[in-house]
Length: 381
Ligand SMILES: *Cc1c(COP(=O)(O)O)cnc(C)c1O
Image 1 (cartoon, helix red, strand yellow):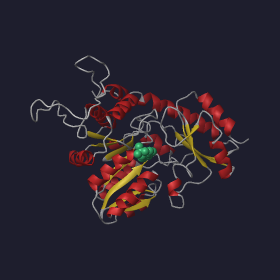
Image 2 (spheres, protein in one colour):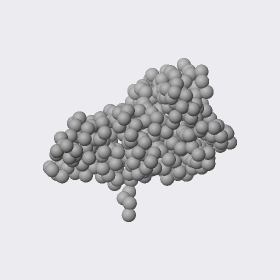
Image 3 (cartoon, protein in one colour):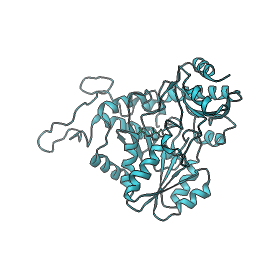
């Protein structure tokens, strides 16, 4: 019988060191590997860009947690995305992506790959007819899904979209950064590739930048492995080790993140300073039922729109003390952000623009009473 998620998070890819018995595998902080005669490699390791045992440990672990055959770890989430795009696309190809996709993903596809002749269409992933129409564009190779989305936590139907993508002959990619494999398993829902910014929940402690791809198909995995080796944006041994260290507690962290975010969302509904709360755990959220079906928890990210407009939103973001004002998300510590001038500043004036009264919270795992007191103290009354 396959072991449970939390058991695998703590043990897979993490066998104790056979020479010393050290329960935690060492960090193989090395660039190269001594050969027993020419071509006599120990365990297949030759040079640190092509492979390193600490990176292998993380890759084995990620493949297990997402339920894929192979995983590849990179120096950032965008480096992972870039490797996938280069492995799949050629000039003239077309990508369909959500109109609320992570801004950096849009920039990479639109500006970097766009300069090499890759075309893209952004579409509302909740409108299946519109998705089908965009997928009919000749040369479509990828359908790119991100759910829950940033910052309004829109939920997209992975299984339905995967069917549409496959019917059009496209590869179905899911950016699983916001949910993490603890709450959402896209490969089991029909996706072909998982993308992660491991910087966020997987690492979980705001101390490392990293990314990963998880793939079930052997041929595609071979092509991605070649780009990882040939272009070289691999994760360092130290970064891979820190990420494995973080993942051990992923299950308990995600449960606590979800519990705290749910309590805060419920406390803010109906608050006079708040115009709207965006959290999939609220029954009033348009994606609530789908999220309840597709995820095993609603996660730690929520956004609010302030009734007092941009000035009230800015004041709120600058007044909390436990919630610290910073980019990024997914760490044990709570963060607060102003998307229109921070994470989403680069998409102002486009259809990806975020309203200037919206504040995003990455709810950490501190005591919920302290988080609630911090928020209530910082809101206009
Ligand atoms: C942060 C993020 C990325 C990019 O990852 P980096 O590690 O910053 O390169 C991609 N997708 C989502 C959803 C993210 O939040």
